[in-house]
Image (cartoon, rainbow, N blue to C red; front, side, top):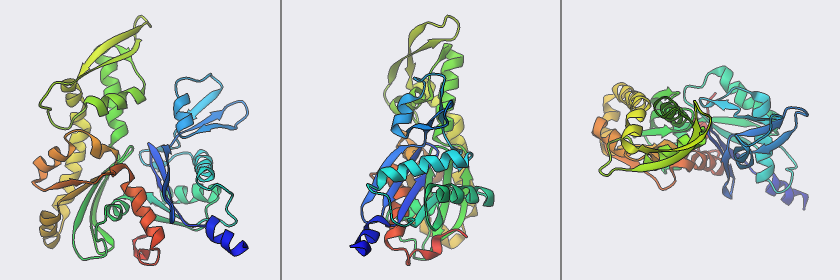
Length: 340
């Protein structure tokens, strides 16, 4: 009975520890958690009040004694202690009972992560109760999650647009041949919209509302039909609540700057591709992953600038978590994809 319990409660775990969301995959069961990378702390006692969805619901609606923290910034941990508390709470949600031994964990990280940032991830996971921690690059995990044959000497290109970073990589035979890691992604787009509303309409809105605007009427290419969304916010000068109408045309102009940075990263990666792999990309195209893949016209924009076919799976938000999870299912097969 004890052996069976150990087998059940000590299963390997995979984590997509993202700036915007954290996803956890439990070996044999799939993705069991997908919640905002956010935690609420009581400043008087230092205790955790809420984590994930509950913390997001409190954002902007709490008293002064609460502090809402996002422990990741631009794809990397900037507060190890808070990050470890968040991870521990998420693990407690995944495991119905406390594991009898520390679970082995696979965590996806940006390709441009430094050695210091790697250690921060490992330390935070260790403090949260993880056993041996293995790191995998996010584009590699996304490629595996999309079902690409990363074990073959054939080039595959992945563009993973997350909350904090955009990862562009060409993958072949278990390794990243060339890549670009850009700290411009969904969050920067949200902040650009927030600033635009403030400067043009003299209204203060939350970042959550900016993201809603982006997903409703934001686009990477001009749309064929006019879209308008009405939003409520606080007037900067009077402090009163007012309603304004925002169109897709103005949001399209706002998103040009962050999107041009992403396009340039894709171009730089293609420039570095060896000739033999370039022909593979002409055949295989580009695979999109991450929340940014859901922006209207993103596929069309990349197809226009690269001339390659751009593909999108049914669950781009879960590609990285599912890929890291697949590694836990076939650990020995994927040994060579781990970072040192």
